[in-house]
Length: 505
Image (cartoon, rainbow, N blue to C red; front, top):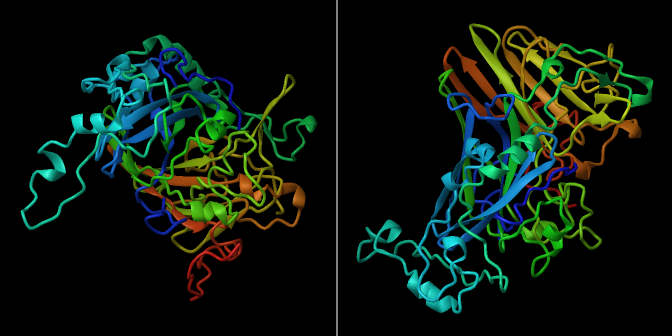
């Protein structure tokens, strides 16, 4: 992962305990939300269409305490584009139409609209809780009102904890503020668009032998990458609960060392989120929960792999040996299953987010690296199947012919058809999609560092003017269950073995 453009808006934009089954793909309050795929229809100049696809994300603070969220936006190749902070009061909801980010219309999703209490500094008109002379005075000035969760309590019933605008446990940085409200930032729209467009160009050439000096074994692949352009824009974002406002990306050392006690990350598992994809022209709409990543200091102190120890975006983790990460987020899986449809007018697309890209670029060549391994199996409704298995092409141990890598970006959505997957069975069926380290390779040269690879997959289905989406089924998370490797992914081989929890590391 690399960062080429950092727009922290330095001038205008200054920049727990687990609740549920840690490591499971469950929708529970979490400390980090991954928005794995964002799509916004736009023209060649990056001007969004008001009637095309756009993505909405809604974030809820389910706690009574104020929470600060830090939003980091990356293009499809994980180059950092822009970051900013928002503040959610107790039980607050924040939403963003990502089309407004592209145009710089921050005022449409900015949380800076409250009136400051007497005696507090008011940087930019936002509640000046950073420079307030007294937390107690400020807390009293923002006492809960008689609406919301306190309104309908019966006299004999103890209700929810009243919402607080100020959380005394979150100490401010002296002399600084979050700088709200951001207001209209359309002056930065060109930079934002350029950052998002940067990797969205045609990539027809594929290197399948891990040696780009030999040229491209597939010089002109005819799949989706051969005609890729910057329309629509697609990218992803991370939304972290943080201790204080900051202007850093996870790829900045200061993000991990610049706050009191080290990282800016907070371990408060209090955020939930949903992503909505809407296209009024085609009458499509889909929705999914965000990818909720719980924090667990216990998991980090055990020396296990966590989401951010594997995703420091090129930054060497500032951790002691053995691996200790007090802000540990749960790791993501590496093998998935989903159904596909090709009959009766139904079509399927699969979205894959992963924490690495597969590009080889120098002054002499620009190739997709098609030797970094993933394997897929396709099964139809008559129990027929096809599979390719080799370490020197994405689907294949002894590949009959070089096969293209259809998932080179860190985020992408790909049509499930014979053009993109020549091993696909006709008609309807299901696909098993497996990434390293769920693949136990004999040849070490093709075995990637297990701490580096994590993925997320969901499928989108279209039928006429209707659409829906579902998260793919998890088949392996080797960071939680080290024995979940091929051929024994989860229990799909039909055994009755029960899993009682993570194996000790």
